[in-house]
Each structure stands twice: as structure tokens, then as C-alpha cells.
Image (tube, rainbow, N blue to C red; front, top):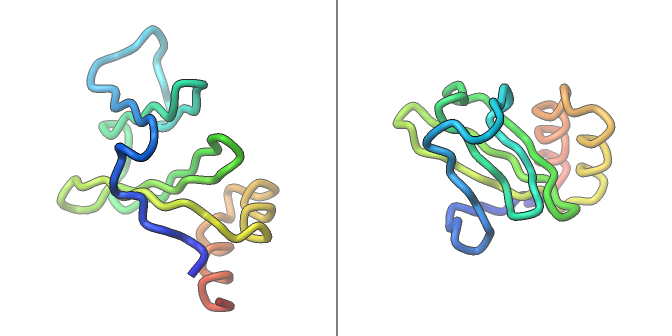
Amino acid sequence: MFIRNKAVFREFKWILCDALDDELLEYPLLAEKEGIKIRPELMEVDKLYHCVFENAIFIFYKDQEEIMHCYQVDDSDAMKEIMADPANMENILMKYSYEK
């Protein structure tokens, strides 16, 4: 499988934003040099969100129980396709998950 579960957030420099920072974020994820800022209150349940950080694509979603899930895309071909067409991310992920 080309995605790995990254539920153990201490492996990365995640910053959960509970309050408003200096700027308002419309998209719930923002990659910065310190890590990825996550605004879970802006996330819709069961909707995929992606973020590029340190040349890797991370995919996040919040489930019905408000639990956050994070995956990293490892397949270089899938990464290229997602970078070229992020709006089609779900279809691209489905395509590669069936191929592997």
C-alpha cells in the first residue's frame, strides 16, 4: 500500500491551533517551516484534505467521532498526479490503491 498511517503525531512537528493565530485560515491545513498547522474546527467530517510538507504529501480527515487521521503518500507517481491535480485527489488515491 502506498499510504502509511501517521496517527502518532509526535513523529512530526504538528501544531494544533485551538485559537485564532495571527492570520485567519480558510483551509484547515497550513504548511510552515515549523510544521503543519491544523485547524480541526474548519474540517468537514469525512472529507479529505491534503498538505505538502518537506516534499511529502500528507492527507488528513476527521471522522464522525471527531478523531483526526493522517496518512502520508509514498508512491512517487501518485504524488506527481496529486500535485498536478489536487481537486482529483480522491480518484487518484483510489486508482493507485487498486493498482498496488
